[in-house]
Amino acid sequence: MSLKNNKKQDIVLFGAGGFGKEVMWMLEEANRTRKTWNIRGFVDDTPAYQGKTIQNYPVLGNTKWLLAQKKPLQVLCCLGNSKDRKMVVEKLSKNPHLTFPSFIANNVTMSPYMKMGNGCIICSSVVMTVGITIGDFVIINYHATICHDSVIENFVSIYPSVNISGFVHIGAASHIGVGSQILPHVTIGKSAVVGAGAVVLKNVATHTTVAGVPAKPL
Image (cartoon, rainbow, N blue to C red; front, side):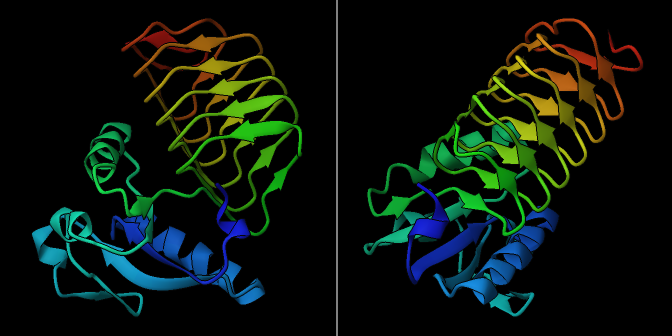
C-alpha cells in the first residue's frame, strides 16, 4: 500500500529520533503537494520523549498507547535499526486497527516495473529502475540507487548514497552502510552488515560484517 493512494488518513510516526524527524519533514513536503494525511504526531518508547513536542508535533505515547487504539490508524515505523524495527512491527501487528503503508518521498525516481511491500520508507532522490523486488519494512535512504532485477528482502536498511548494481540479492534485516557499492550478481546474506564506503565484489555470508575496498570480512 502506498501513502500516495490514501486521502486524509490519520497517521503517526513511530520513532522520534533523527530519522523519524527526517521522515516527518518529507511527509510534510509531500502534504504540501497534495493534502493526503492527517499527521497526528510521533510515538516513541523513549521515556525522555514522552509529553514533548518535536518539530511542532506531539509525542502521543508509546507502544502501549498504539496497541490500545480502537480506530483505524496508519503507522510509519521510522527506526533505522532493522532488529528494532522488526520487533516493534511484530508487537504492533497484534492490533488489527493499525496498518503499515509505504511512504515514497516526492522526488523519488522509480519505474512502474517493480514491486514493493508494506511499511517501506523511500527517501528523497532515490532511483530504482526495473525488475526490482522490495520486501516489507525496507528503508532506502537519500540518493541511493538500485538497478535492474535486484531483490531487497524484508527489514533491510540501506543508508545514504548506496549504489546497488543489477541482479543483487540482499537478505532480510541486513544493513548496507553509507556510500557503499555492491557489484552485479552479488548476494548479501541475512543480517549481514556492509561497512560505510565498502566495495562489495563477492558474496557476503549470513551474519557477516564486511568493510574496505574491496570488502572483506572483519
